[in-house]
Image 1 (tube, rainbow, N blue to C red):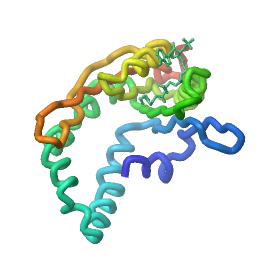
Image 2: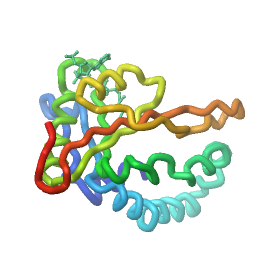
Image 3: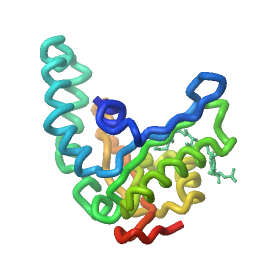
Image 4: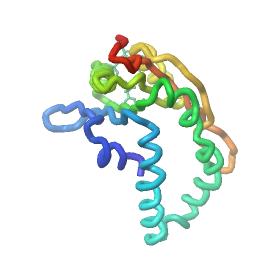
Length: 182
Ligand SMILES: CC(C)(COP(=O)(O)OP(=O)(O)OC[C@H]1O[C@@H](n2cnc3c(N)ncnc32)[C@H](O)[C@@H]1OP(=O)(O)O)[C@@H](O)C(=O)NCCC(=O)NCCS
């Protein structure tokens, strides 16, 4: 459910780092998060729900606990209803395999993605990073991203009521009239 949009609906926005035929890193995302959200809502999530119903996984105790803890948070939509969508319509996820980090692969992947965003004259890009993930904060700040906002993203389904926060980072890339930022 989490990757279907990227692989099936907008594969042009995914780039991989390849080492001897092995994928050791990727950046995936989309140019238009509103289109992503609408496709998720009307095409992807309903299919997943039907499959989960047919397979009986929807009523698995772990799924029920997860949904009970988080449905309220997720329905609010967080940054996906706020300024991040207007000025930073694209979004990305980046991941480099352990053992291959610190070699500028993440930087090159994000730069490849940003090049595509600029070429499409999309105003900017955002990315959500868990508040505890300080290496990724340094990474995005080093690449010229700035913190836009913090939001509650996930409540642990262990009954503790602990909430995990996400920081939304954004970077402006174009002004929508063909003018690009570095
Ligand atoms: C975040 C991540 C993608 C960085 O990839 P990477 O290939 O290791 O990063 P790079 O080598 O391109 O680093 C570029 C710059 O980011 C900063 N940076 C990267 N990793 C860092 C770390 N662990 N601590 C501090 N700064 C870091 C550095 O400033 C670095 O530049 P420098 O080497 O000149 O100092 C990688 O650590 C990862 O996959 N983490 C797990 C997934 C994740 O957290 N994704 C982000 C949320 S979408």
